[in-house]
Each structure stands twice: as structure tokens, then as C-alpha cells.
Amino acid sequence: RSNGEERIDYVYKVVVIGDSAVGKTQVLSRFTRNEFCFDSKSTIGVEFQTRTLTIKSKVVKAQIWDTAGQERYRAVTSAYYRGALGAMLVYDITKRESFDHVARWVEELRAHADNSIVIALIGNKVDLEDKRAVPSEDAVEFAENQGLYFFETSALTGDNVEAAFFKLLEEIYSMVS
Ligand code: GDP
Image 1 (cartoon, rainbow, N blue to C red):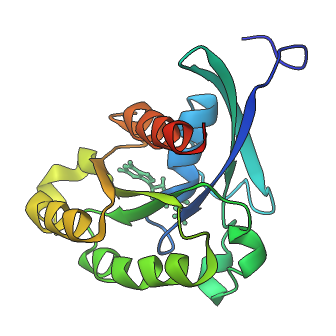
Image 2 (image 1 turned 60 degrees about the horizontal axis):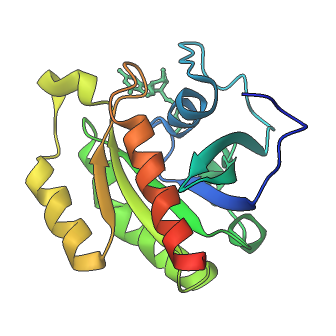
């Protein structure tokens, strides 16, 4: 992939939200750099990461924003959501509480983001299946009721991370083009 000189047809802003420690930063770095860092939070202060990919022969630059820890202080502001075409709403399949808060995050999106924002619900850390606290069916039901796409991922193994982002970006593409 050549950077800089490539023709870019579209830039899509995507925000990653969800409770603290569910793996938002790791899901993001798995997608943009194919990396997983056990010593997380080295990225504090970084606003977004990008990855350029091809969707239906168009060159799309995904500009993916990380809360960079601000969710801890409820400081995720309207500026964060402004112009976002997609959202990855992440919970941790081993932390029931992080799933129970998903409805609150959806409300937050409905209040601050564009009405047409495409949302993917992401149950992360499926590599910890033996510690699962959220049955897939609960999330499937919630996603269906709310009109969200649903994926279970592992940022650690990389399982389904590409699939989730590609689905989100393809849906954005079909919505805006
Ligand atoms: P954030 O606060 O939502 O951005 O979460 P981080 O990306 O910082 O991850 C929080 C913790 O969960 C870190 O210790 C990560 O190493 C760990 N983590 C993130 N994703 C996964 C995953 O898919 N599997 C496992 N086992 N651990 C993960």
C-alpha cells in the first residue's frame, strides 16, 4: 500500500466508543496496523488512526477516532461525533456491565451524532470464551431491535476485526454514494 501519492476518493470518519477497558484502542490498532499491544494506552492523546482500503474499486480512507481514555471522565464531546459516518460500539464479552451500558452509548450516539450514522456493535475479547459473561443471543437480539450490525471479535487474535470494519465501511459506502 503506497501512502501519500495514492488517489483518495472518500474519507470516512468512524468513531470507536464503549466503556473503558473493553479493548477499543486494541481493536483499532489491530485494524489500522495489524498490531496488538499488551502494554496498552501508549496511544493516549492520539486522536485518530487511518487505513486506506478499496471498496467497490473506490479508494476509501477510514479515519478512525479513539476516545483516548476520555470516556473515563464522561468527556466524550459533540466534537468527537461531528461528521462521523460510522460508529464501532464496543463491549467486552467477559464484562456484563460493559454490555449493560451499550444502550446508554446508543442514546449518546442518537443525541450527538448524525441520524444516519451506521453503527456496529462489537463484542470483543472472544479469545476469552471460558470467561464469557454475555451470551451472543443477548447481543444479537439487542442489535436487531436497534438496527445495528453485530460482530464478535478478538483484537488479540485478530478474529473478525477486518470483517467488522469492512462491513461498517461498505454500509457507509452504500449510504453515501
Ligand atoms: P479501551 O480502554 O477500551 O481502549 O481498552 P484497551 O484497548 O486499552 O484494552 C484494555 C485491556 O484489554 C488491555 O489490557 C488489553 O490488552 C486487553 N484487550 C483488548 N482487546 C483484547 C482482546 O481481544 N482479548 C484479550 N484477551 N484482551 C484484550
